[in-house]
Length: 82
Image (tube, rainbow, N blue to C red):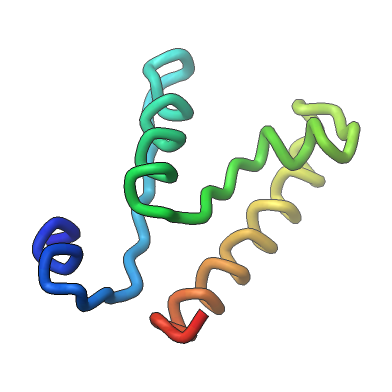
């Protein structure tokens, strides 16, 4: 579906959710998609590291993930206007 949208020059907002076991290559795959699709990637671990938050602080992780979901929903609602 993404290939079809790209080949016609028409873009639809697309959300790709990647999940898997630790060490299974999620981040590597997400980084590749980020480049290939000119996309924005949200990674809670990277935000927590940038903010110097303990990666095992579940309360803060939950708040960051909620904020990221809100931002993703907003981007999807904007469609191709952004």
